[in-house]
Image (tube, rainbow, N blue to C red; front, side):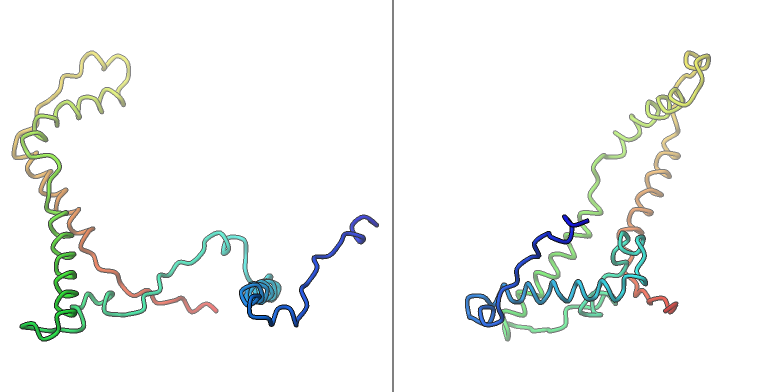
Length: 174
């Protein structure tokens, strides 16, 4: 017990030293550390371990224009404000790039049609029992089935990509 009490405490710098110009950052760090420790002791019983692990569930956006999917706020035409026109062009290019990236295909339809039967057979073999391994023959799906599958998957991917962020109302269980 004596060993714990005789442990040297962390030495604090004097107030006059911290007020000197070259010590400003150190003073700010110490003040921040004190505030954090004080806040932790105040809210220690209210904050649970799961709350600490979970972190922040909300994204803070400084402008509602991004949430509402509004256009660029300042407009300029015919060279009246070149800086604004440049920003508008950059915004437009980013949006077009995002749309083009989604529309671009990695695999064309013919390659997908050729690969589809072998994929289905390998999945059946993986989940089938040992007796049925030798009996499974790959069934070639019709091109209409494959085209329907591809169009459905593209539509789903586009829907996921194009969903705009919605405002999350904070819960009122305070």
